[in-house]
Length: 571
Image (cartoon, rainbow, N blue to C red; front, top):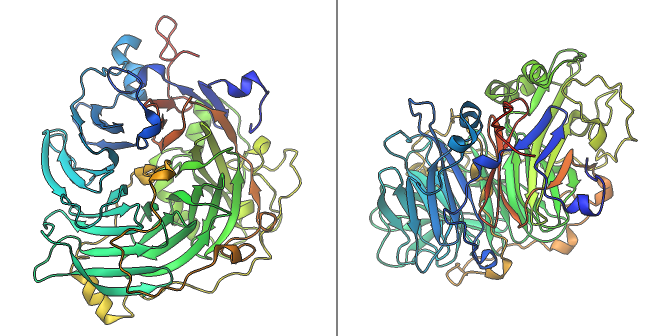
């Protein structure tokens, strides 16, 4: 529940929590941290980030984990839930004294990182690492090699790297965001010039511009995006790789058609900057969080806010969808009783459901009279040290459906079985009165010069992206003192139309609180002593991390086997 007990209980660090599908339990012996566990100055350090990759090791233990703590970067074999249930406690505990690779940097700190899942093998992985001084490093922690360093002389951008990601479906293209408000597209096969790059305008719109690098030979960066005002805190690619969602310190979510470099839609936070963003598994919805302590759900097709969630008491640092619990039920509702394990089998948690969500939702149309039960599960963590889980149901998604009942309250989260027989709270305020936007999608080939300019680097198909959790989700910075309002190298030749934030409240960009449904969290638990900086949903567990540098694994219901003599977890 969102509010349980009070006083001492509210401040107690939780080691387990329960949802409609069962109990999630902390695996105390699957915790990762710095090997010596000596406290460090977390306040002066960049946020701890975690990245996963599966190297398809034939031994069955192919999961690898990378995380940064202060000036240090670690790469380990990840011993999660499956490893823990097969062996005794002492053997299953992570051996922190033996990382596969460890790096300590001087004069700069790692801020974010991302694996290339397409090229990963048991013998080699490509890991991009962004730094506080603006550089980006390409390393192979298995071979313990450093292959390339981009922006080495800081001629491209001198500000902190806030987010770095491989372009979906590409083995060589990657995108880098900086606190200057700029993003740069790189190709690992190209070098950076020895002089400050010169740019020519490719595309310009409201509060954004895109430039190509002007040079005789192809060099990095291939593109420069200037987006909004202040830091660009995070970006996230849509599941099909065609669209790019960006959140900035000016409080705006901007969604671009990546190939056509065109703006699809925007949204404004209730107040303050937006710090994090993620896509639903089917690409139909975007969730953003930030300094307004809210999670905001935005509909991609209608380009409008459809709900807000209030459960955090401070800034929201990470949002992420749970691909393995998101479900679509097209058949008639059915009653079900049995064990937690049977319940999981019945509603098919796992990759099959995550993969089928988009196709099953797309079958629904206005003439379909068959009931459709939809539940999107997403989570959020924040500086208040709390983990919140949220269920987004058809009541919010399809408010015009007849007989739609509110199932977004904390006490009645049963949208997967959806029998509607529980005692339900009064319906939440609807967003029906908000005007629906006209179709905002642009033609990707409407401008031949732009298409020609983009084609020189967009040579790879971004379709058929392999299913993986969007761990992009965890590239943001909470130390706002490091953010400059504008980079010294930002081009001043553009006259951009600026949106007055004070005039957006009450509009479709930023509806008032009473104009959209207000979600309550399914659970809201304090799980750390320091602010939380990581939330990743894996098939059999949830991974969280705090600024102290402790990475925790929470086993999903039915995924941990109790042992009388050697319990895998302690409560």
